[in-house]
Length: 247
Image 1 (cartoon, helix red, strand yellow):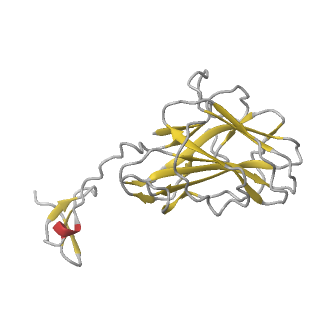
Image 2 (image 1 turned 30 degrees about the horizontal axis):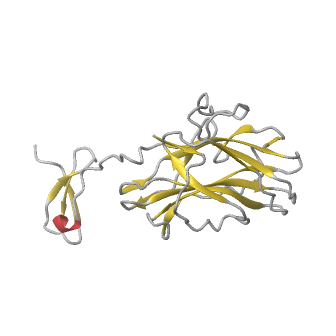
C-alpha cells in the first residue's frame, strides 16, 4: 500500500487542473508526501453558486514514480464542513497520472463522482469524511493507467455542490508529524488528526510482473512461461500458440 499525506509542503509543478472542476479559482498546489511533514492547511473558498457543480480546493502532486501499470483501489479520509445544511456539499476527488514535468496527462485513475447527494459535509464543525466519496471503511476501484518512469500522481480534492449556495465549503488538510495519528476510517471524528489518501499497491516499489518478454525476443519465436497454470506460449511475429509444457 501507499499512503499519501496532504498538507503544506510546496511543489514546483503546475499540472493543468482537470476539466471535471467547474470552479478552480484560488485552488492551491502542494506535495503529496509519504512521510508526514509540514502542518495543517484549512481552506474555505466560496461555493460555486450553482447546483451540480464541482469546486476544486487543492491539487497534490507526488514524488516521481517508477514505470508501472497503476491499478487497484483507493480510499482516504479528510475533515470538512459546510456552513449550512442547505449547502448540500459532499466530497469530490479526481486522480490522474502526469509526466514528470507536469505537462502531459497519461490518464485518469479516478474520475469525479457526480451522483446524487450523499456523505454530505457536517455543518459548522470539521468532521471526518471519506475522500473519495463513499470510500470510508472500504475502497473504490481505479482505472488502469500505464505510468512511465518519472511520472507523478496528481490528486485533486474539492467538493460537489448540489445546491445554488455560494457559502464557503471548508476542507482541512493535515500532514503534521506532531499530530496524535492519522484519521480513522469513519465519518464522525472531529479531532485534528492527519488527512490521507491511500492506494492499495506500493507505487514506489511496484511488483515485477514476470512471464513476459520484449517484442524483439518474441519475434524470434522464443518460448516463455506465463502466470497461467500449466501453459507455455510460443511467440512468432503475428501469433501466439498455446500448448502444455514439456514434462
